[in-house]
Amino acid sequence: MADLEITVRYNSPPAKLALTLVVLALPFWGIMIPAFVVWIGFMLMSNNSLMVDIFHQRPMQLIGFLLGLLLVTGLGVKAVLNLSDNRIILSKNGLELPFFLGSTLGLRRNFSWVAISSAQLVDSEKKREIVIHTTDGFPMYLDVKCFAPEELEQFLVALNVWAINCKKTPELELLQDELQQKSDQKLLPSYTAMWDEELSRRFTATAYVPLEPEQVLQGGRLKVVSQLSFGGLSAVYLCQYKERELVVLKESVVPQDSDEELKQKATELFEREARLLMKIDHPSIVKVLDCFVEATRQYLLIEYRSGQDLSQFIKQNGAQREDKVLKWAADIVEILEYLHSQDPPIIHRDVTPDNLVLDGDGELVMIDFGAANEFLGNATGTLVGKQSFIAPEQFRGHATAQSDLYALGCTLSFLLTAQEPVPLSVSHPQKIDANISDDMDKLVADLTSMNLEDRIVSANHAKIRIEEIRTKCLQTN
Image (cartoon, rainbow, N blue to C red; front, side):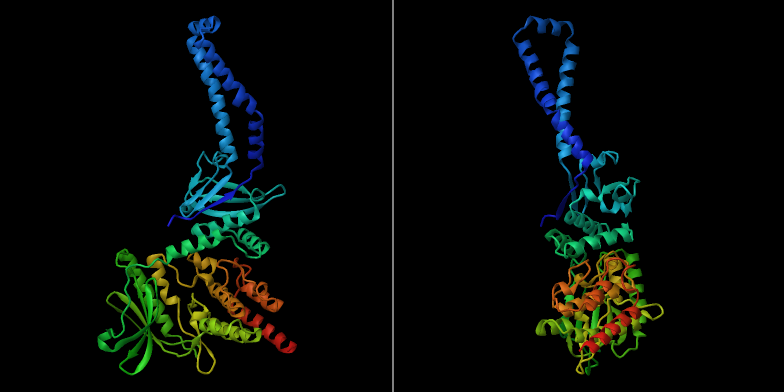
């Protein structure tokens, strides 16, 4: 499949003015000069006495004069081509600027995403500019007014998706948020294509082969009953432990071709995370019973809880009432508050409907941890989490406790609408279902803010907001 390439137009007024002037001069450099050169050549070929005398007396001067005239024509053609090409071309390899922008950057037009170190939005009385700094010291100044709004949004999304080392100021992220709000989050196909291409690159599977039913581990104490899920470099199995109780086995693999030092660090991180998870003691979180390494693969042995996950529940029953979703929201945020209060805080990294199960009593239980897979991401460059629920900072490799709150907001949006949220965006479920209250819609939007400073700051703050809405909902009913 061909690599994705996005084109956005940069309509620079100075470039337009220069192009207009060059075009106005077209009769001179595009018609009169070529016609004059052709006439001189015709006169020489016709043995015109005057032209022949001039050529014999000053041949080099005449040739130089004619070449100079042709150079003017060539420069005119070149100027039209360069000034009329206003495309900024974006791909996973970097960005290519139009000539008139490259001329301000030492005639350099191509920049890899790795070379982009930071981006900021600068407001002044005269203009609003995006200033992009590169590792080699060349700053790019892009006037916001020179983009069409939908193409500016595409440019910022490309910066967000592909320039993973670029540090963006909150003002720039807020600008992207504003553009998404104005477009009602109806993103162009290229937005989704950018996301899908990058995610498929990061989640690319290798030659990893999962375990088969009846295979045994730990000297026969564990026997694989069935495979529950499989993807990328990990799998989850239902196993029988000591021929009696059922347990869940989570398997993760570091590719054999990884750097040895990196594999060692990844394994140490896995063991550290596993030890933290084994200390968790909460009735709504499955217990991590053990961790071990066998045949270079890392395993977590997890308590088995039967039930239906919320993803399956929504597929069968459709979008849920707001009061029920608020009850689930209170349960989820209480779990997150517990995890984030640990020392050190435990970031789940994979809060999705797939990992929330309704047990036999109808209570929610958290059944999986993306945290234990952080080692895999560090070793392979892959991501932990489901793409529609991943916070922008987690996508860039910097998950925080607020990343779990972003995923919570995405989960609530899914439960309310039965539709997965648009990746890397602020969710507004009310736009899908007008019956959703303003308070609920704002809660989800505040949880899924692209900017950390605007996002709800902690699970405790989220819990307070949820309880306020639940109280108002009960009073209304």
